[in-house]
Image 1 (cartoon, helix red, strand yellow):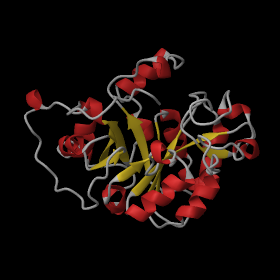
Image 2: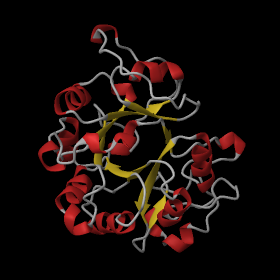
Image 3: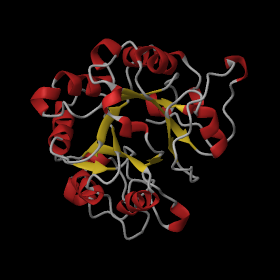
Image 4: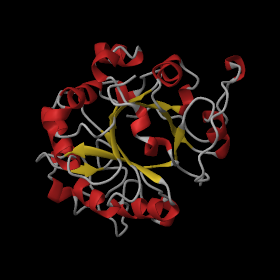
Length: 286
C-alpha cells in the first residue's frame, strides 16, 4: 500500500473527471479556462487541469509548452511572465490564460481538482516548491500528479517540509513513450517511465493511465495488487468509458457527457479480447 492509503481519498474516483475542464472549442469554451472550470462545476464533474511554470516562476493553467495552438501569441510559455500570460486571450474568447491561484479561487473546494504538473524534465526544484506553496493552504479536495517521476518523487520526499502531507500524489503514465512529444526526453528517463522503475521513490497514491494502453501490467498491479486507484485518460465516448470500467476506477473524459453516478466495478475480462472502442485520437502527448 502507498504511504497514504487510497481509502482516505474516496473523492478521487467518486465522479467523472472533466479533462482540462468541461470544454467545447466550437462553443467558445476553451480547455483549461475559467469558463471550462465553471461548466464542469455546473455539471457536477470533478476537474483535471494542467499547470506549468512561467519565466518568473509563477504557475499558469495551460497544457502546451508553446502558445501557438490556443492563443494569438507564439513561442514558449516559460519565456513569458505570469502577468504577460494572464493578459493573453484564449482563442479570441473572453477567457485569458488563468493563473493557477485564480483557478483555485474559482473552484473553492466545490469539486475535486486533479492537477497535472507539466515539467521540462530538467529537475527544476522551483516548480515543485511553487506548486506546493500554492496548494498547501487550499481548502478542498485536490490531488497532484505528473508524467515526471522526479517531480512526484520530490513532492513525496519533501511533503512534510512543504506542508502537503494531506495531498495525494499520483503518476501519469502509459505503456509507450514515443513521438515528437518525447523526443527531447533522455533515453534513461524513458526507460524508467516505461518500466515503472521509479516506483520505490514515487510511491504514488494513485495512477492515471492512458486508456489506449489498457489493459497493461502496471495499472493492473497498482489496482489489484497494491490497492491504489487507477484513472483512465483521455476517454472520448461512452463505449470507451464502458471498456475502461473493467480496468480503471474512474475516467478522465472529454467530448461527451458521462453520467455522474459512479459505475459499478466490473470483473476483469478475457484480455485476449480486450480492445479499446473507437472514440477519437490516441494521445501520446505529455
